[in-house]
Image (tube, rainbow, N blue to C red; front, side):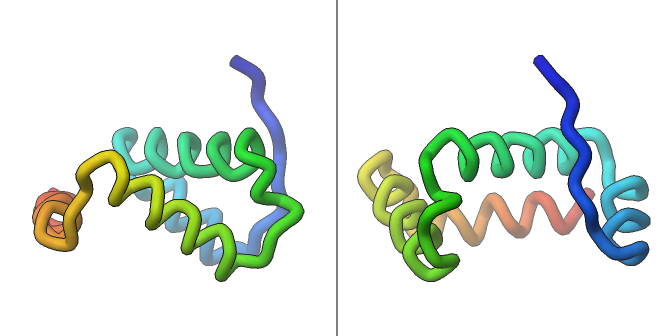
Length: 75
């Protein structure tokens, strides 16, 4: 595994540093998916649609997503 540096504003930096390790790990995974999936050549709308389609193909329903998000907010 390699480490990269990206520029963000101070608010984002602080939020990331204060996030628990599990959230940091999830964010790292999202960045990896974004760059590995050739998403960097697409608009944000296209990326979001593709991620949504793949999630639905893998069985993620709106109800399951809501449950996951609710669990993350409780931490």
